[in-house]
Image (cartoon, rainbow, N blue to C red; front, side, top):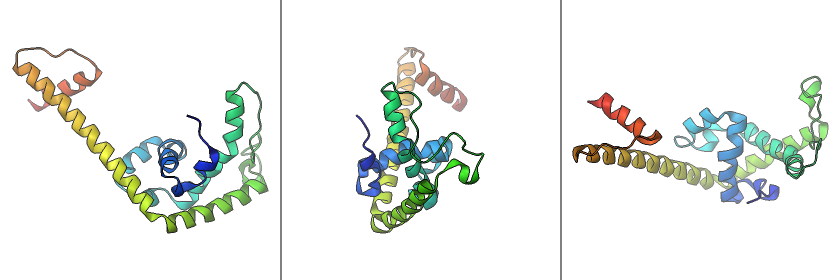
Length: 172
């Protein structure tokens, strides 16, 4: 499925895209390990500052057309508000128009957070459920290994069962 920029910019008004944004874009900017550690324990508003959420949206918007066109074979497609001289000039290569857009996005995120607080709670609950389901599946695989050993059958090695067996060996 292709991503529609319009939907991403709707923020919390489009739950599916908001979750995609938090799961796919934000970790690239914030750090995958940090997001994985926090997303099922805290509301997004607690671990993602408003300015960083706006910056993530700005980055998506800045690079959206470039990525689409380059995926179709075009070369050297410019971004909207940055140039190759990034880091060598004032504002790290962002144009004034890009900075204005960022400031607008900060206000948009502020309003989004104020009016649609429930979406952050729904996201957190979804991530808690996903984590619980993963933990239950892992426990189920461990129990299957124990049961097969008790029946006298040796479990076949694979990436998942070898992790489980080493955990079991440590418990004995």
